[in-house]
Length: 79
Image (cartoon, rainbow, N blue to C red; front, side, top):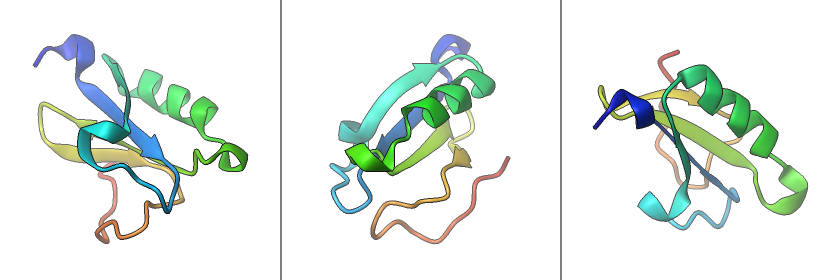
């Protein structure tokens, strides 16, 4: 894994998450870029309800939307 694609953004419809890698939206080198893209991408009127960002170097969930995918474990982003 390189820093050029360190932050992976996942997202989708709250009740229709495809699961795993099928929910990936993009990979980013900077967390701020990933968050900005996620907020622009989010649109509850078109089934883009939830998103979260994983730091692939640490394995941590580092940012997430207020909406969570149905059945997601109860955890909070670290940043």
